[in-house]
Image (tube, rainbow, N blue to C red):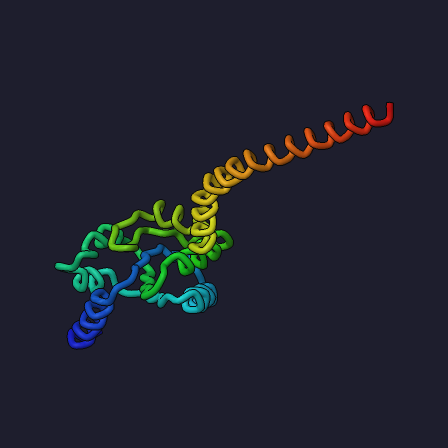
Length: 180
C-alpha cells in the first residue's frame, strides 16, 4: 500500500472515529473467507460495519482521540466493527456467531463513551433487549403501587362485606323471631 493510500485510509478512519457510536474489536484468526462474509452480513444486518484494518493505520487514526485506549487491543489480526446506533444488536449477532465459531473472540471496544474489555463486551452481549429491560423496570416500579392500591381497597371492601353479613344475620334473626 502506498503512502498516499495509507493517508487516505487514516483520514477515513479519523472521520469514522469522530462520529458518535461504538467500536468493537474482535480477533477473527482462523475464520475462512466464507465465514468472514457470513459475519459481515450478520453485522451489517444488525446495524454495524465490519472491516479488517491494519493495526498500525488504526493506531495512527486513534492518536489523540478519546478512543485512544483501544490501541492496547491492537495485537494480531483485528476485525473492527463500527456501530453508529445501538451496539447491543450488533454485539448479540457477533456473540451468536462466536457460539458456533470459536475463532471469533471479543478483544475490546468503545461503547457508550467507555473503554470495555472483551469480557465486558461478552457480558454486555448477554443482556436482554432494551425493551425487555424497560418492561422489567416498569413492573418493578409498579408492583409496590399495585399492592398499596389493593391494601387500600381491602379496607372498604371488608367493611361492606362485614355490614352485609351483619344485615343478613339480623334479617335471619328477625325472621326467626317473627316465625315463633
